[in-house]
Length: 511
Ligand code: HEM
Image 1 (spheres, rainbow, N blue to C red):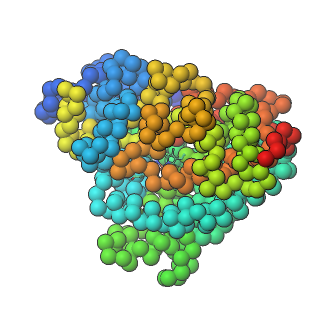
Image 2: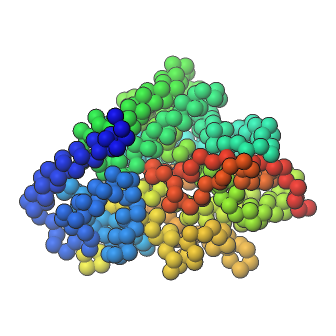
Image 3: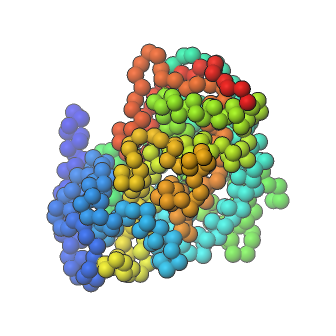
């Protein structure tokens, strides 16, 4: 069967059944009494058609960009009868998600198609209401991360050990074109594996876990979820079937490696890693829900995906940017030489390495890894700016749009770490307007619990590698663009596969 026939098989049922569902959705909508003064946005058939076309082509974030320009800070629309509101400025996002007046009205999420079918119907801790169980999960995950993750000594020990191996691997590849992503992904996965399980693993297992992360990242992107949430039967057709089958097979392997394998050898009282903390915590009052294996399995999958795909994207994007912006690389290297001299970087060096930290902020602004991705649910009608956002509305945070607001960020499609430095070269304070406009890790009661872990890991990898090597474009083939508009649309944006070269530095400045 030709590709075009397969493609048309995917679109035809989508449009046909979607049209029926739209009619049902509209009837439902007119039978339901929503407040009259909704925020502006597209309505009716035109909205439906634009949305379905965008989701089918995976260009939802581009569509949201054009609606933001047309309608302003709040854009409200219905997707098959379900209400959505897109937040198009950091100010309105902070107000709704973090201000005392609203934050508990917008702290819920609910399982979408992906979470219902692959994360045990919301037993993870992303796609959940902000209820007592979620609060407990967040609390003990913070505690576990403190002991095994960003507890600084253990963290540096684990990351440092894997970095030694990674650097030795780079040493074998000096001055030749190679794909950085395979070795980097293995290294990052092994770090998470050690912290969770308490032992290291082999390359095959790391590759299998990476395959699960990539399958999840593909299936759970918002464009696919919009279609699958409202038209779940589509999972049996075309690309959706292939994505669901891949996620299902790889999940089985992941659960075996990260949960059943650990439980078999668990000895009460002996804590090897975060999974053992989960197993132990199940005996504490208030945590009985953890006796249901599905909670632990869903949370582990959640952590693996949240921790890996995001950091993989940050580091690969950073290396691609080094190839495109050699002057930024030289500035980071100059700082490394000046601050570190001959010693290796430590987490505490972050506070003295202002340019490197500014680069990491800028890379995250420029890539905007999780466009539209926070997903919150409105608990009660919220009156705002003369409008009402109705109860049951899903909020989408359009950081893809507002982190590139050209009225504030000059040349938003250029990488300029200086945006986050003051006149003396010091990192801008977290309260500075430029930083308040960045919402990389979310905001409010559901902000990312892995932020410190993520920032420290990116810092250590970047500074350790750039201390020794220049990262250069490949010699024998072209380098892809670093513009995130050219990246594939998955939940957490990843740069395309690319080759680069590492060359031992010759330009070290004396400390
Ligand atoms: C560059 C790296 C990362 C980025 C950009 C990122 C971004 C985010 C964002 C935007 C959210 C939603 C926040 C909100 O709704 O306000 C989130 C939630 C979450 N992240 Fe991260 N994250 C990163 C790394 C990590 C790491 C390393 C971990 C674990 C060690 C992690 C675990 C989680 C979890 C468990 C949630 C769900 C929290 C909840 O719903 O209550 N993330 N992350």
